[in-house]
Image 1 (tube, one colour):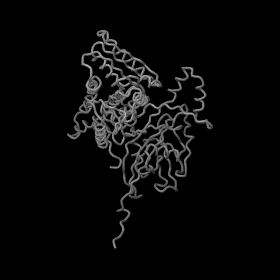
Image 2 (cartoon, one colour):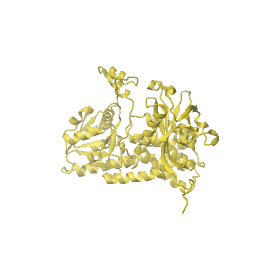
Image 3 (cartoon, one colour):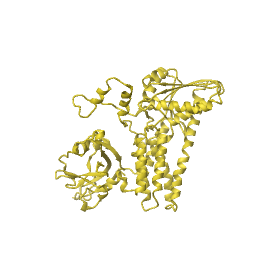
Image 4 (spheres, one colour):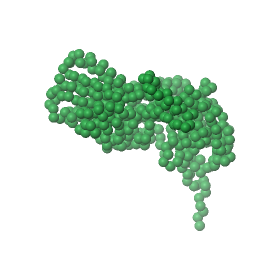
Length: 527
């Protein structure tokens, strides 16, 4: 009879876990909390660790991270904010019979001004003996430090200050802050900001032993930790840059770092060409679909409904007006897009841009009407099309765009069933096939909503504001400021892209290609 395999020969059990590092800057510099595991836990007893735990079946890593933090420390989103996500990775530990798939996260304690209760709110459970603050740079993967395996490795995946020199680290911090705080630019502009930040990081680096791994880490952070909800375009742009740099790397390490910077400069310069291609595709689509019963040079009226502020949509509308025949009438209807009124800003930008053009051609007429968001059904009457931008396109062809997009589309479908629903977008907005969750939402500061109530003199708004405080127990009031929502693919007639009009099959194929490139440059956690 053959003997059963020894434990050393047994396959390791795969276990996906989150490692959540809690940071505080109350002392003027970052400190990270480490928790000493108790005698009662199954693995790594008495070792220092972040808040960690298994990801349940059907649970997302970030949901698991929040759950484990509450269970082990009692902290909630009232006290913490998600700061950074790190690249997942895998390692095996035969001593415990496990192959760990690690998803690192970094959270920061909120200031009291944001409702945070500080470190006094941390109450550990039975899994830990005690906890302390540490200087992140003191953490090492050495038995003498007393940490769980790969503790420092997990930390540096979220705390890039351990990877980068001071200049590169400062440039990356600045770029991330700019991306996070810019709530008025569209994804095209944010992608350009991200690429410029990436270049600034590279400008502070040089050819060194781990230069390739270092720039991949920088690219990851700009994608994941800037504005991930609008990050598909940034991801694709950075993947294109990494692909070109990798080609140089495969020819041998670059002799001149300027060759690397030149790749980024080339991509920056070529971005305007993409918009031109989209506008050319839009013109061809309109002539073949909406204006088919009109001679090319015959005056015509064209009625468009749009929402928010998209540079691609803005440029497309400008071209529609400029290229229309003499005596044509463009009836443009724009929803104001609360709470930041980006629709109003786009209306102003269009009127200003077209004013100088119209001085030389008074035969064309432009009507601009700004509607409240609640008047989407009225604005949608007798229109030819709804023009939408896209901040993100899922592999199924659904589109994430400014909140208000879905009501605009649904209303148009009801009051103007003949209207075409057209999405203008570059293909770089398509998300990787495993990164296109349509349940993902970006919540922003409710004060952007309530401040409008205050300045407008809305009666009774203080009563809601007072009852939205966490200490209120008998009545729960919440003001939500959700920026984006999904328009399902079955409501969209066509995508006008830099590769021409496309359907969902081409979108799905693009998503698969993006997924392959993402795994190539950032790795797959289970590979």
